[in-house]
Amino acid sequence: MKITSVACALAALFALTAQAPAAPPVAITWCAFNIWTMAPIGAGGQILVHFTNTGGATVDDVRFRMLWGDHTFTLVDDAGNFPTGNEIRHTLSFDHYGEITGETLYSLNLAVDHAHLTSGVTWDAPLAGAPAVRCIIYRT
Image (cartoon, rainbow, N blue to C red; front, side, top):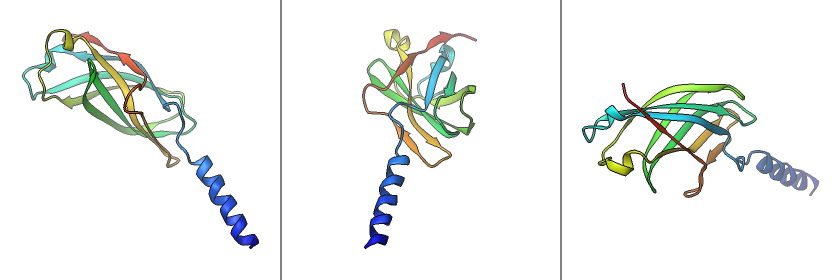
């Protein structure tokens, strides 16, 4: 009886400590995309992103959700070793398959969609309401 009770208590404690954090463990501080990489349709695009690991453990994979207007356009993955408190500055490549013109072109927001911590914990954003940062446009 005692062994079962201890095992149940340990399992419950592990479940509580292994839960994903409520807030995203990664905060996007800035983003921009190259307007000239958006044509033709189906071409690869580039987005510059600055983000910080605000969680309690090293993050080894972050997936960003690119939002054009009110619709998710694509997901962009960035794997690496991102320690707590460090700002990461990366250029990420993505493929786009829809037409992006007019007002839609100027409506890009970037949100954290998923994060994997080296502790084994994963965090997934809600389908709606994920904190997003408005991206600026640059031309090269």
